[in-house]
Image 1: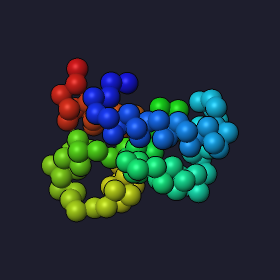
Image 2: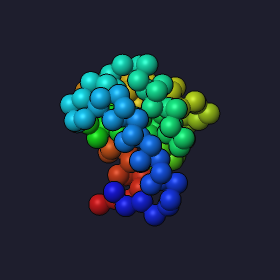
Image 3: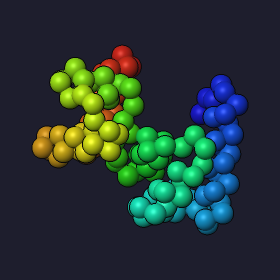
Image 4: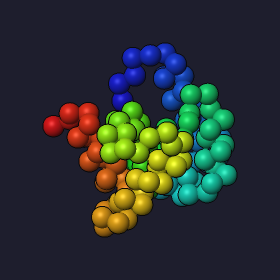
Length: 119
């Protein structure tokens, strides 16, 4: 990870400390731990961690979630889907993925790559 900002480094350390305090030591531990809604709330207590961060971390450990960022919001707006809260837009992407027969994390990644111009 390339963090160029001290706040991001501090957030990463705070997440690490919180997970260690909860006995989360491995990728599998984190995958299981994030499966409990209450633990998502615990992770939100870390300054700088919001729902997108939690969904992104979930993707890193194989949970196939949609982490809505500016690219996904822009893509949705281009399609006429605007003014939705984070959770609502995440549900739109999850439903679209299900209708298309894709994993939601895979659809999220494809949209992100397309809108970000990534190769």
